[in-house]
Image 1: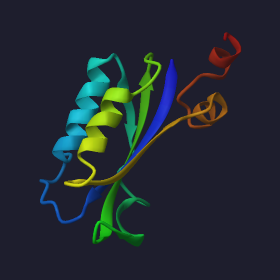
Image 2 (image 1 turned 30 degrees about the vertical axis):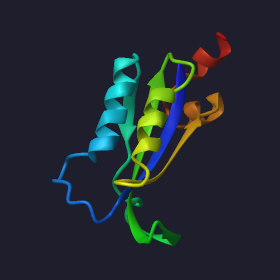
Image 3 (image 1 turned 135 degrees about the horizontal axis):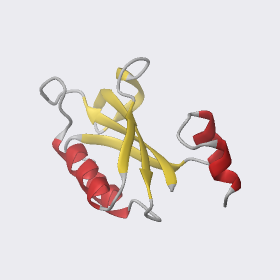
Length: 119
């Protein structure tokens, strides 16, 4: 099992109902789950949320940060990355997928310490 962190900056000008995700982010989550992955946690509350960007991106100065922790057997998250890359200019300002090292996954409580020794 591999663990990833996906950070997405959603355009703050989008009118998305409370408790729902941007359509492109929802598609990316759906593709992750269809490939056998799961969203372990969704860290979209403080200290993240609506933040001022350090510099303007596509004439936007604010964005809503969403951070997902993902567990999957897949070797990569290419489909989700492709979906978010296509949406980068419309509703997703930026996104980044990072594989979490086993030490960090253990620190966050995503992976049991004895599971990393079994490898």
